[in-house]
Length: 488
Length: 107
Image (cartoon, chains in turn green, brown):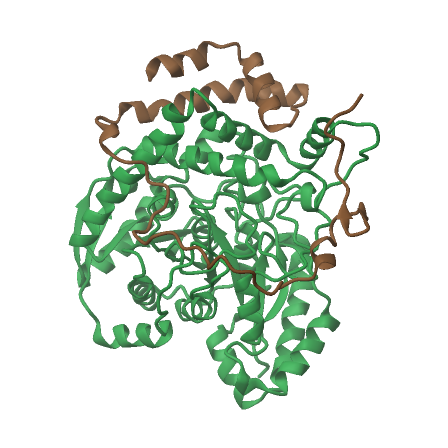
């Protein structure tokens, strides 16, 4: 019987390739065939490397499989992570032809591990969105229902996994951009502790909130990919100088020890969720609470959490995106006889889409004289209040859970046309970014054929406990290595 | 505080959009301006939710989430990790090692 390469998790593929390195080529060929079949429907990628290039790399790696952690494993990379020699657009006209002269630290680490960079995935422009519809190029479709969005902003990475177009993926998460699409596509996504994974080479949106993280179709693969990308990097001033545990070993240790966890349930976030989300979440929660100690807790100031998040994110975006002037890189125009204001304004107007221009304008506004105290500093004061509240929760509980998203995957065009509704849909996920803690999204079921995810948060650098919880739900519910048939 | 926010909301939204365009050097088309004129007051009103939090002044602004000090490298020159020409590879207007920029003063 022929091997089903598409659904194999990375950790099993690695074992297979170690015993028979020639299989790497069969695997790459098989995934590439799959891409050719489903990509015209899903549109997960902005750039895909050629089969010949990938096969050449695969053959080189096959000669020395034992020196690599991820020999020949195909990884889809979000298009805001710099890849030397591979176009990196941030899904923006501004960077449509930008080819980075260097690799992000996470890409260096993936290459050192023997992984193959398959291509660059679609996203909301500059990661500003929750549906992948603000991409300047095209929207990505949800492989489970092509009339719906895959979430965002790392929607291309999540869709590539769910459609069987990649084995692992990298995303970035500023307010839920890994967890939201993971929940909408029945995949696993982890936003690591702020500073655990280097941001060097990540095209910045909001620097105090951004984190690169792993995406996969099972918990073990999430642990494996986190292992490769985590760790101190002197080129990122916010990188944490901490020792990184062996996540797979630690996960297996906890799995055998079976510790009883203290779990806080953010009840009001459950109550405001759509009925289908609530039902699937309660079923999964019942399973968890039969083994662990659960208690309902409240979330203070729900609207304020989202307001504070968007003020901070937009303020930082306005500063980070001030660098796009059409001079050193990005969209170009003629300078002849024109002032710098004319040139910069033309480039920025043509290069940025509406949502990006709106967010940087609002960000500059909340930082401007007379309004900084009223908006920006107030948001940062609230950020401390929120962090102190959750620091208190983490003294009493190991894990804090809620639905990842309060809604089911919307139809294309449904959410993006109502910005406040789109911003409010981020309420469950932005907390972890504001306070810097790790958070995971775990697939827990389907409602009317649409995926639902559970989010678990924990204290900083406690990724292992999140992975353990993910493994427990994965084993009890059976949602591992799911690939959609992608039906037109 | 409420007074400041009220001033924003009562300002002519068209003037506010003009101001924002100048602030970040972008333009909005007439269709986009109409859309923005609808969205801006709602978003700024939404941001005012923070006014409802009591005694917020008791909390110091949180810029950085970890209790570890900021880290800077020693103030010593390091070997360049990338060549100058690689750094400038995305700038089209390179001459004699320089990137050409638009004039800051035009007659």
